[in-house]
Image (cartoon, rainbow, N blue to C red; front, side, top):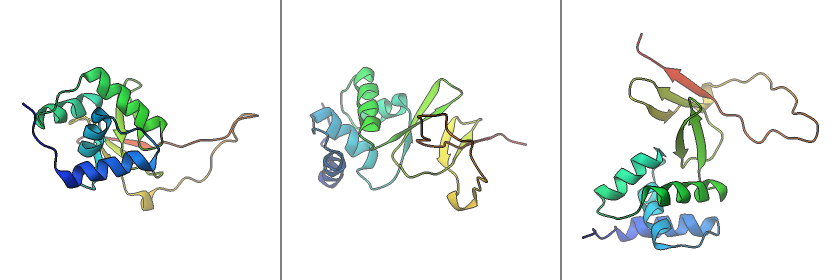
Length: 142
């Protein structure tokens, strides 16, 4: 049996999808409401979002979670942040900002944007433009 989703969270999720012109399928609406329904930004892995769906009493496959997260990224609703070349986190905050990666807990959090200074970037190769700069600051206990 599945739990009813909070109507306000469902509406926020639906509006989020509509802002990117994405068709609101049941799975997309459910995942969107879990991601942005409370108005907070999140960093999730596909596995952690899959666990959230189960905790909410919702049924969806892990493959659907992966595909939906990729669709959200493609629509500009989320950014994918790759750590260690193999672990992907999906961030609902899409402005340019740095991240802390906590090595002991494998958690990704926002770092203070106002404290970051980048003095310059190399020129992009001919015919290319810089789309985004990702800054991930790895933390471990001293």
